[in-house]
Image (cartoon, rainbow, N blue to C red; front, side, top):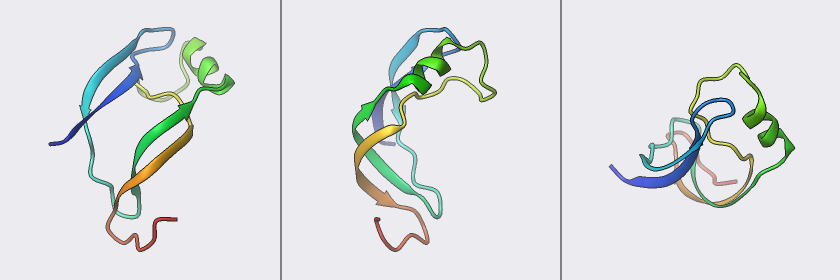
Length: 80
């Protein structure tokens, strides 16, 4: 399986883990994007500083993404 490097927050107020992770195949109706750039904003800092945001860790921060579409999931007919 193809792997890619990613930085994940291990737990609230925790360390960031930089490792190689498996690249998933896109699920039906979704896209797989190779991230080229990603901004970190106040929401990400808030997520890092809080005790618990109600989602399972580890998590990937950053939601202001620029990337290249690598693959289309089943049923996707356009890349826009």
